[in-house]
Length: 304
Ligand code: GLU
Image 1: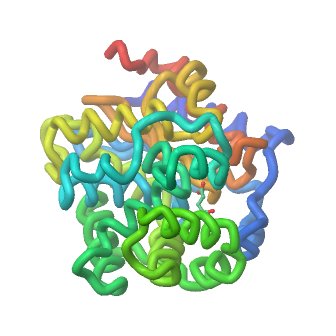
Image 2 (image 1 turned 180 degrees about the horizontal axis):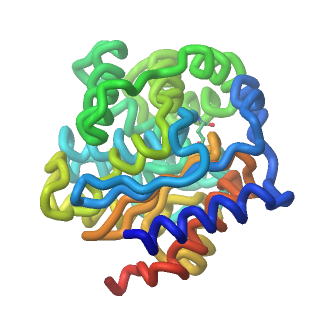
């Protein structure tokens, strides 16, 4: 435990002096206001202990990390029926690419690229008002984290809705293929709010504990689904850098353009890291570096 704390302190200290921090996302204007010098990391253990360093208590926009939670809800609601509408293969393309949708008849490659996440949101909207679904997503995340103090930043959602022409295009395109049941505005409106959930590293690390499958963690989905969500995080969690993250870090993770990454050490720990500067593939630059350092220090890997 003290060794782990020492590793986190060393990682945060190194990150603080790193000048090569990447670029804060600015295509959602509200995200561009975030201080690029922020860095936080937290490790939640199945015992309930949470170790952290840096800005681990500062809330940030989880953005695409929300796709892990909506996928868990969708699999619970639709089961394997979901896979008729979205694939399970890495895309090898940027997070917001439209390229494959044309040749693949409006079926997105996986639930973690934007097109796939829009389909997932559309699927779980069935029978719900958007407000109720957002309430359900928040309830899920709050229960996972064991913390009621998790909210949606409406200014971030509004900012993304205003500047979200690309996502709207993806949604319209999928609708033309019959793979979107609800009106595009409804799906986009819900999606931008789910992405605008804010959490601290400590909250997010705790919220990921259910994915470790460890005894004593919240039993929100079945063991089989936990394996499958982890598999998708491993193969598709970092867009066109998923293979590189798997090679360098070697554990299931999901990144977001807010600069956060949630990573799971099956059976052992859930980790959240946040540094707003992104690399050219839209993943947190210092965040992925920090996770690489953490696995080197702890020896954590898929081999157990
Ligand atoms: N809300 C962001 C978008 O749709 C999520 C992208 C991300 O976090 O990677 O553009």
